[in-house]
Every structure is written in C-alpha cells, then in structure tokens.
Length: 458
Image (cartoon, rainbow, N blue to C red):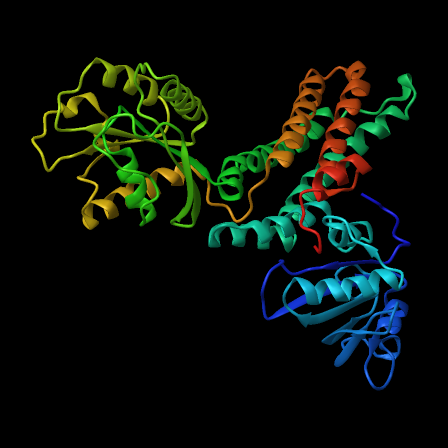
C-alpha cells in the first residue's frame, strides 16, 4: 500500500452494479481544490463551503468540459471526518458508468485511486482509531448475522481496545517497578517487592487468558461454524441439507454415491453464521471420482467445528457405522436417526442420548427440533457469549504475549535478584506483542496484511 498521506485519494465507496445512488469519496490535503475543479454548484465553490454543507451540483470533466453527472455533495473538514483529513463525498446516480465518469474526472483533476482500506488506514495513521477498531470496520461490513454485527460494533466503539490497553498498562506498571530496581547499584538494592510485582502480573495474566478464551467465539462469528453432514451412502445427508436450507440445493436420489463432491452453503442459526457442508457417503468406493469425494469428506471431518452424523434407523447398525461413529463421537456432534417413519432397528444404547434427534427429515416439527438441538450445541462452541471476541491475529499475539508474561512470572517467583534482568526482557517482549494488537507498535508489512483484505472505498 502507498502510505504517502500527502496524496489526495479518491474511490467509489458503494458496491458496483445497479443502485439508486453511488458514493465517491475524496480525502486529503487537496480534496477541496480537486472538488473546485470538477464541481459546479452555481454559487460558492466547494472549498468555500463550511463543514457539514450538502448541496446540489454537477460534475464536469476536466479534459473536455462534458457533464459527468448531477450529484449531491457533502463537505467534511479536518479533523472532523472519517480520515481526519478534508473529505468531500459526491453522491451520484448508481450504476457503473455514472460513478466511473465521476472517478475519471477526479483522477484527471489530480486525485489518486485509493487502495484497499486506504481510507481506514489513514484514519488509523492519523490517530482517529486504533488497529483493533480498524479491523472492526471490516468485520462489521462482512458480518453475516446480528450477533456478529453487534460484536463488530462493540469493538469499533473501543470495547476490545479498552481491555487490551488495560492489560498493557498493568504489565507496563509492573515492568517500570523492575526497571527502577535495575537503576540501583547491587549493594544499594532496596527491599525487593517481587511478590507484589508477581501478584500484579498474575492479575494481568488472568485478564489476558479470559480474552484468549473468546477466540473460538470470534472464529465462529467471523468465519462461520463449519458444520459437516456425514454418514454412510444413502442415509439422507443431501435431503437434510435441503431441509435446513429451505430449498433444493443438493441432488437427492435413492442411488448410493450420488453426492461425489462437497456442497457448501451458508445459513444463520440463532445468530450464528454456519458453513453447512454436505459430503459424499463414507464407504470404500471403486470409482476414482467417488474416492476423491470420500477423501474430501474425511478431510472436512477433521476440520469441522460441529458434525451432524446421519444414521439410517431402518437398518441395523453395522461395522462401518460403528467405526465411523467412534471417530466422530470424540468431536462436537449431533446424531440424527433418519427414516424413523420406517421400522426402527438401531440400538439407541450405542449413542449418547443427549446428542440424538429422531427425524424423517420431511416434517416441520422434526426440523425445528433439529435446528434447536444444533443451536444448543453452538453455545459451548461460541464460548462465553461475550460482547467482544478476538480474531485469529489477536489470538496469535495474545498467546505470544502470554508466554512471555508467564516466563517473567516464573523468573520473579524464585525471588532471585539475578532474574530481574531476564524477567524485564520478557515483559518488554510481552508489551510489544500487545502493542501490535492495537497498533501502538506497527510496521508497513503489518498494515499491508490487515488493509489488503478491505474493500476499495473503505
């Protein structure tokens, strides 16, 4: 990404395609001057308008003077804008051509095309938000459920930042006490307050671990729980997928082996986004295509957050069922006894009764019971239902910070003054990891990794 804040950037902020309006944003030191070149508003120039102004105008091409669009213009003055720079927003007609014509005019007038997430990156670099809040912007845009959106909004408002800063400040305070001890000559050392320092660090470690415990819920809400439907061939996996989705997504046939590849669809259940995957029936197949489907199914089972294991209740439980269930039962799972409208021949003693749902997969009441059971299983997967949950990047940094913090506590617990220096080094390393979370410590590669995943225009 180009981190030159001297450039004035512009981008279309709305999604491409037909719509009522499109929004084009200009940000930077020359935003007003560029707006003056391309906008005709029949009165004062945009640069002469006060902050908060919005007015009807026309956008013209710098090159040939042709009209590009009729628009509404909004004026934001630094530092009271999204980027803390002068910002002009142009609200024109929707569709690709109208917004492209406006962008062509702005670029010809001296603006540069913004990169992915560059407006939000400038908001971070200019001190309006920290990195955790910047990431929350992307989370809010991508939220697949109300629960995920609420979490992102709480993070955007600084909730997660406040907790991380509190942990950082606690560790920093205890580190400062150690640094003071390092300034004394060896024979002038005061009474070592190591137990007191350890106690303060242990309190910070507890906070850090509580935050780490939200990683699973953060993964579920951001990425969706991977729910894999598995079982032997012809037990009703594809039918179950269609019933949960409410439409015919997978081909259903009485012929075993019809599903040869994975079929993934998304749905939201009780506020949790799900990645629901239908898989090939698990058996020893002769066909190479079906063999590949079985391999993919087994790979998905290893990565699944939750498994729906379907059993044909109309036939006795045999060796292949038992072998598969022994692999599955150690993971979060739900057993669905299908085809109960036929004679039930499966011995229920084989299963944990708390995980069993009986269904013919066709009746509304049974579908509701299945969805309710799935929702209950998602609760422990989702953790503590906290308002704030960390992402994978945060979890990696917190684990590294915790390792260094724990090492420092162990060193100081011995009460040996010779361990003060290595303990202080560990604490500085822990602080650096926490600083990377909020952006107190950052480098260009870190910013590239974070903002490269943003949409252009945000």
